[in-house]
Image 1 (cartoon, rainbow, N blue to C red):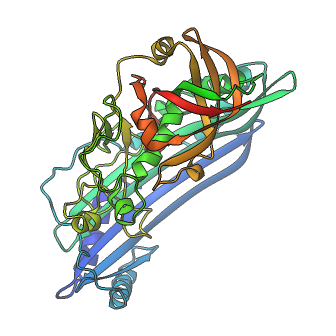
Image 2 (cartoon, rainbow, N blue to C red):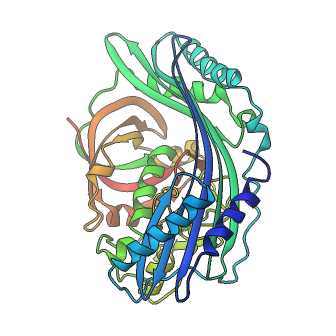
Image 3 (cartoon, rainbow, N blue to C red):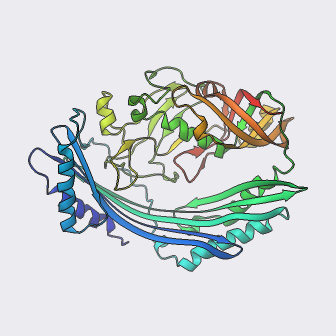
Length: 452
């Protein structure tokens, strides 16, 4: 990867678009990436992978018919073949009046500085050493840590350019890395697991000590956990739990989900859908977000979209197709799984507007309840149309305004609608995670739990 990668990829895109014939719209999405993943066990390398890839995806739209093809090389002769294949595929496509490429919409591209040249010069031995350090530190964190399921270092470097015959010509580049540990703790025959991680744009951003301490604390504080009694309680979601719920909530707020009849929020724009404390935004222009980006999968500038404001549903996120079909416009929210796919529509960096109180202060206000540290099976347990969900959970009892005994093997069952309406407070501890949603402590009243 070179510093001039973006310009090089733009030139590739230019050559593809120059092959457009009369009456055609042509889009080239050109990507180049390199990824490293190291996992260690007992101080030795358990697995190591380092891969580089590049390629181009081409869409051709003519008479409302869309064709797509891709190639894993940027050779000129292959580019021409890929355009021809996309053109042939368009001939078999069903005509759709809403098919069409993105066009410049006047929104300026934010300069986010997501690229760190320094990551490229980090020796492989240093990356391996980071994973080994993480394993060693977490082992030493507590005598009850009896095993490390995994200690890993992961990074990626990516360049992308989008060029279209409709006037889009943008490029972006970014680096990202993280360390993560999953550990086992044992005491008196009881075994618990915990995790910790640290994310950044280059290895110097990573905090190995914090990742290790979080993993050790999450595992050891659940030792000796028991089932709570069934009932209705106030819960405090840990930021990691909130992030998982927000990722699911975000998926129901895409124009694509609405058009496919897979959103419980369809036809509810302008309605109250949550407590007045809730303001939900999707903002990939926030450089703190692990999934931040300057442009979307169609080359339009990303932007801050307010989805729910003070409890009222304001908008969905759209790509060009869903925007047109919904009678509105793209919100710069086209997402792609690489050069091998056509663009979908979805949230890219969703978060709640944080409140003023720390988790400790929120727990003090709650008085009695449960701090939910982790949930399991959430994605498979949510119905995106009805909003019903049921998930296993574990955490800590809250008594007298402080965390107490550990709890496990209980179930939270509710609906997304009720949960949003019962939000009592939002914490100040906004935390960006290695996913498309941020976490924050979230207090929800009147939650039904099933335990002993």
